[in-house]
Length: 501
Ligand code: MN
Image (cartoon, rainbow, N blue to C red):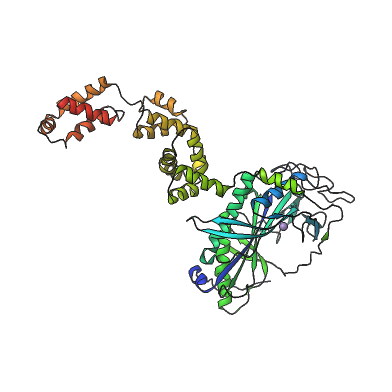
C-alpha cells in the first residue's frame, strides 16, 4: 500500500495552525538475572539461542512461573511514576503469529495492569516543567529477534532468508503508556524527548535496567495526532515504532507534525497506521494499518495465577525507593547555591554526577563547576567526547584544586597539570613534581629574577620612583616570564615595590 504525502508543511507553520497531541509507549527490558517466566539466564550479546528453556521456546507442555524480582521491579517503576499498584492483577495472552514469538502469543497484561494512574513531571532544557499523565505500566515478555539477510536496510522485504534468535524471547519488560499528552504546543517534540530521557534516568537510579537505548533496553513508540484547536476532538494518530534514541524521538514527532499538517491542509485524512522511523533523514514511512480494536483475541493466561502484591510489600518497596533524579537535582541545586541557569547548564552538559563527585573529593561546588564547565568542557568539545569520557576523574580535579588552594600551583599552571593528567602522566601531584611546575614561592630565586628585570629596565624604575605605579606591570611581566609563569604574581608585585622603594 502506498500513501502519498504532499510536500511537508514547515514546522513553525504547522504548529501555528494545528495542536499536536502526543502519546508515548516505552518498553524497558528489566535487568533481572533470568527471564520473565523461566530460569533461562538473560545477558546482552550471548551466542544466539543459548539462553532458552522449553518455556521461552514455547514447547508443548512447558509451564511458566512468574519471576518475583521482575514483579518487584515493575512495582518500583510504578511507584516512581506515582502510580497506584493493583491489589491483584492477571496476565493475558496476546495472540499473534510471528516467528519471533514461538508460542504464537505474547504473555502480557491487558485490562489488569500492575500499575496505573500515575504522572511524571518532565523538565525541558530551559527549566519549563510539563506534567505527563501515565495511564498504565504493565508487565510482559520480550519477543525474540529476527535478522533478515540479503534485503535492503535489514527489512524482511526483499530478504533472501531470515534468522531467529530466541535469547531475547521471554526477557521481562515493563511497558509504560501515557495518556494523550496535550498542551505542549510547539514544544511537543521536546516534551516527547524529555519524557523518554526522564524515564531512562529513573530506570537507572531505580537499578531495574541498564537502560541503554543503543542496545534496545529502552524502546519508544511515538503516537502523534493533530487537531485544529485544543478544544477540538482528538485527530487520527500514527504510531512510529521502536524509536531508539532521544534525538530520534524528537525528530519523529517533528516529522509527523509536518507530514500530517500537509495531509490535513490538502483535505486528505491521516491513516491510522504504524510507521517506521528513518535515522538517515529523520522521516517516517508507513508500516501496517492499525485499527483501534486489533484482534489480538486477548484472554486471561490460564497457566499463571494472579499477581497479588500485599500492601505491606508495596510499602516496603516504596520505603526503599532511592532519591529520584528530579528530587536529587533540586537538592543539589539548593546545596550548591548555583543560579538556575548555571544548574541547567550543568545538567544539560551531563556534569551533575561529576561535580557531585568532585565536591565529595573536597572541592567547593563553585570550583568543581569552574573546572568541569570551563576548561574540561572546552577540551571535551574539542575532542568530541562526553565530559565523563575525559581521561580525568573527579578525585583528580579535587586534588588539582587543593594544589591551587595551597598556593603550590596557580590557576595558569593548573591548566598545564591538566594537560599532564589527560596525557596519562598520573595524578596532579605527580605531574607537578615530574614537570617541575611548583610555584616559586621561595623569595631567593624570585629576587634574582626581579633584580635582573629592574636592571634591564631602568627607565621604568625611574617612573615608578617618581610616583607612577602604572608601568610596574611590565617588570612583573618579565619576572613571570623569567620564572616560566611559576611565580606567585602577588608576591612578585610586593617584592618589586619593596625593591624599588
Ligand atoms: Mn508491548
